[in-house]
Image: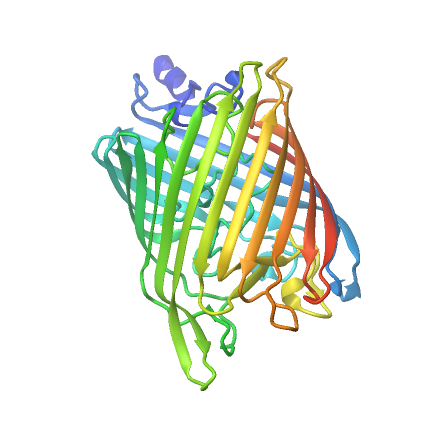
Length: 438
């Protein structure tokens, strides 16, 4: 009996999630269910807390009053994840939590900031058909197409947050970047692949049909087809789980190039100039490259670049503001607080570069970084009908006190305010993120 209790309580490493930059963590909480550890379950939990100063877009309101700038505290993410293998062929994943709670938004039914709904992020099963080459699975899953960052892990991002444009249908036809469906994944030599066929969720962002401006079709029930393929030139990355690492902090030498797609017939609708209702497909494509290179001086270089080529139908544009600190706008509800045109028909480019300074000790690592979003959307126009580009610039500094398991990130963002497309001004955000995960 004592031996059994010791085995159950033993905390051991996990090869699929070791690359977090802190050896003392030793893989976290992995509970063995048999003596050799082939049967186990693994537990993870994490919080990301933001302290932020935000210059709001023109006309923003809070509690009905004008709000030029906001200083607030928010929960960007609060999650719990468990996965388990009864043997090498069967895997079950359960992941739930909350996102984006502050005193204004993220509350129950989105009415206020209180009592946010705890909901499933992932709930899927996975069966190994041919070891290494083919796994099949299904459920509410995160084996996404499109790009590496569409499958990003939020545990080890390099920048303080993802650019959001990487999750093309976020909370429109998916559930926080997840869908219900089936997937296949595996590796053939140095080529890693994943493909999926999913059902779109009924959209709550469809809105009214606009003339020559597509929006999500609330009557869409066509399947979503997506996939992502990456070629690994140097060290191989794990693929037990879909969550892609943002920076390895010098623990791996990785260079990958990738390409992906997402296609959903009848996903969009609009009215043409003759007054007819027209449905159209959503067709998205991306190419990207990821580099994580340990340097001889003990530092490391991390770089990522992605190009997205998106067709959401004519003139589609969607503005998003993460942890939005305002609850309304005297001008446009879509451009309140910190929102800017994030997704739409056209081209998006995202790039980030970081440099980990040579390590003097494992419990204090510094990593400055820069990141750039550049969107060229056909639906973002001034009063003359000319396209207006969207650019967002981030400058940040990570301080790792236990690798990714305990870190502080200070980020400065300069973003555009599109309240008046004829006179686009710049607004600033300063965010201090504290993150701990176990």
